[in-house]
Image (cartoon, rainbow over all chains, first blue to last red; front, top):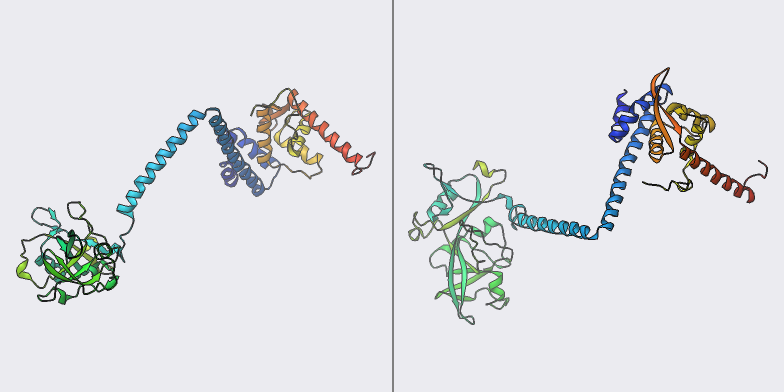
Length: 289
Length: 116
């Protein structure tokens, strides 16, 4: 059989093809019909028969549904529940896995883990000297940052309240690529002794305990008996990185600066209390750092 | 779909192609190519039935019980022949009657000459 006609016949239902395929081939030959026109005709008829079959099945299904309303209700309820469950699972999946973090070029942000060559075990707790070494000696990251949780009681602004905060390296906000909505972020000078204990507060704290007033910068906050000077307000979008254990820490109300290159006496290599992050340089692959 | 077998006018109107096929078979049984040739001849070439459409019609007509098909040997080997059933003949008659009524109406409205 001519390949063109054979291909066109494949669009017809199998039963039709078996029953009439040979007759069609023979007629095209004996009537000396135009092969292209005949093949096109067979193709159109085949598609029409397919559509007809679908419409017939749908009509039959519709009639069955009308005849058995209880069954129909169960089917619709099943669909509703399964679609709902799918949507719920997908929304979690999107939030946790698929949606990018709300930071610029978030695909280049990585959490750092230490792998021990001796036994292959890994650890995501870092000490400040270790982070300093990584920052100085790597060639893959444009910035390395670390944070560790802190807390303290705010006094002098209405009812005393417990705040959750974090100590961060001065590079922290740069690595995440976020910009302050008010004031500034940390600069290396902020981490030196006598810098006046600068503090950056969250949008939530600004609008709750601190009353949302615009002249916030320079305000003194007393947390745990220590006086801090407000130098900036973080944007609402700044999330809190998840701790290594998987427990999420409450969203920080404030950030304080630590400096890898200074205060070294305060942090020994054994104080592995920090969680480290880095931003990959352009054209660097996380698997090859 | 089950149709009313008591009333041959229930499937009407049946469409020009189907009616010409029934007309071709009214004179006796024919195979597919012969039906197509007859239709082409009776319509002076105005209606040309390509095999895809022809066999789709024939299959549907067989399903509806208007025609029956059987295989027979001829000079070209075995091929399928089609024959009108009594029910198919009644449907064709009903369609002819319907068209006759239409023609008479056209005459009464002077769309056709009175004694054509």
